Image (cartoon, rainbow, N blue to C red; front, top):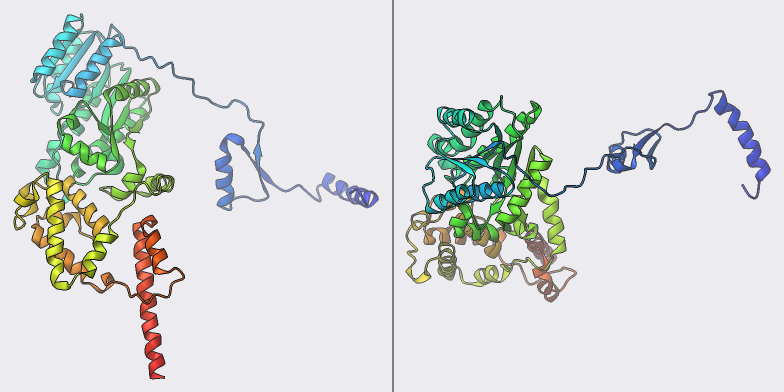
Length: 488
């Protein structure tokens, strides 16, 4: 344009009339606001566009969530119902509500105020001038729920809030689930939630909070009944919101210091080994107050070390969360590594006649650690399930076998109750398979054996398996070439 201005001018003079009379037209385009830049790239990546995709910075009326003032208050002229309210966390919630203005609370539980802790906390709230009604009732019974709600209607201020925290755990692998075990877990969770839902439809509630679990988000080995019951709560919250009713389902992760996990420290420790940390009651209450104010239909709250979960998860990580595991693994490379090659190679290097004894000895030590028993007192001929092995312990033992020995043992096989000796036999049989044979020293890789060994602890399990497979393949090809050469 600088060197030939006259030429450019004549070209424009020729083109502009054609645009003016419609002979030519600009390229079509689609404009996306800058706030939806991801949608613009997605639109282009799917090859849906013709012409140009434009990002506009001239965007007005952007919706921004108002800042939260962090204050949760409850009405002093209203009644609030907490099912499962006489458990450790339920009592903490009740006390928290009292500290934030609540003056009329109904605590509902199958056994009433059965513990000394419950009785003392209830009396403390009553001495503070709060009306605390303890209802010994089964939330899974529509008649008993109707009785409790009838008492509120006739003798207390209007019901304004419901927190459904009742639960029962009866863990079992899917193969052993029966109708009784399903009903026992579903009764408080599913039937209880439905009873509360149907019998409060005419109440003007400020909130209807359902306490769900991370089991409904991830799934959890041995908790098919519990995971499905909590998934129902998540769906019920959406159903209520679709009808214009308040409804929030909170999928809690592990809660520490109070509640079920506080009474079962061994389970909590195993969950932490999987990367699932515990929330303190203070953290949980702060989040509960936030969700009461913002009212999401469903939210999950967990403390997770994604790198550890990716290494030791008791369940396979779904594609929904796989990117978080990958990101954590890349960020923490070297912090969470397995070192099973040494043990595996030692077994492969041993004479076949010695492998069973070595494997049995290793398993004895590991099973004893998982069970919290003494290796010397462990009966290696006794079925594992008879020694107390449950589903979470089975997952921990399976992870050790896969991580240290690079062998697979289905969790279902463990829950059938093999003895230590029988399990050792199964693993030794796997070691004897051709794919587990030690690789040939005559390797034709670009890296030397010393380089491979120096870097092996930085490789993932799959990378190590692929590396061994490549080595074996190359060794086989080299042998074939040598054979053909000798025949020639």
